[in-house]
Image 1 (cartoon, rainbow, N blue to C red):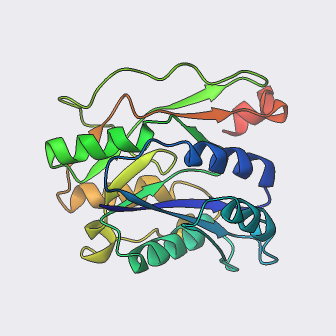
Image 2: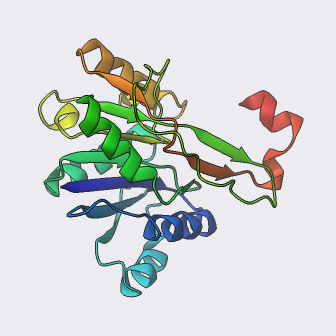
Image 3: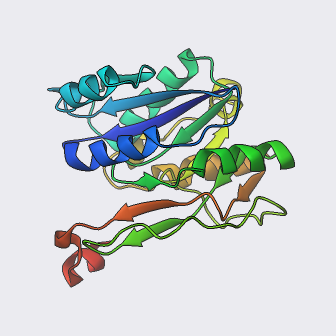
Length: 219
């Protein structure tokens, strides 16, 4: 089994380092090969040296590349193209400031295999400044409900959505957000089955500048 984990980034090397450290601690299923793809939306490749350092420290399947066209849809579509080149059966997305639980990927894959579903999404825990991730949830993948919507901050899906059905992120959402909701709404309309895997958690540390009423109002 091959999985391509897609991580877009833009000028956030410290969160990206923490994210990749957490990815390195994932407990993978037997006979699972993980390709970690980092798409840098900084035309100067600001994350290049960081990724080279981490890859050289025992992370051989980590690849960094630059997507100079700015925007969320552009960078996510570039990740889709690079992921398809790996021959992976499953594609996963995380944001560059998120920390997956050690069994995050294994639980998603277990749920997809057990149910035959096409898309598995899970919860994102917001961590206040200075707090640590909570203990891993124990909820398993049995009888997962249908999620109301699916985002790219915690999702694993079958490659055929992009390879056979041709789904891509719409460029009209490049600078507004919502490109992931639109992508998976298109998936739903294609007849793909979406499930919620409650135990497959990721954590998103909140920097202090986000702990303001102004930021929350904007969100």
